[in-house]
Length: 250
Image (cartoon, rainbow, N blue to C red; front, side, top):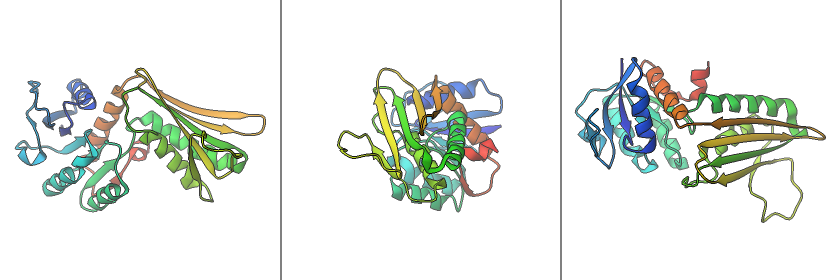
């Protein structure tokens, strides 16, 4: 049984994780962390990790980037693995979590869906096979309450594609300010915000007289919650190191 601490437990994703854990028999929630300590009758909720008294095996974070340092400090003190699902980390914070992974297992992904991570692997393969004969465009769509644009997932897709290229790629966000032809070193990234769209990502490879499109559509936040829980169960028995969804796809 994997005992989990959920950071951001009273947020949208925290509540989704709680609901998903309740129907599983391989894990449970020992405690939660949230600024809003509204009791749910299922587990104790604290405003900061240093208040937690319960024993646990793994911490899942779906909260805010500003909490990263305190969560990593708590996890390293307890020698506890962490699953970091929050988006919007700065380069300095990414360096911080990578440094922590030298001491504890750290699972970090900007998207916890197994499907989207499979799409990334397919996109990398396509980029290698198609080379510079195909232009690459990424379109992401999310609900009208999402603050950041482009999405962390769109940037993750672009980063992974750029990593397999044999030359540097430049990200082009929208084109309203551009009055020139598209160059071969571009990856176009475009954002749509509206309604209650959970999350849709499309990678377009546009060549001469043919177009190849890879797409993923999340129908519910449940897919992200399940991904985070699966990562927590997996991480429980792993040594210190940096992990991501590709480890679950092996």
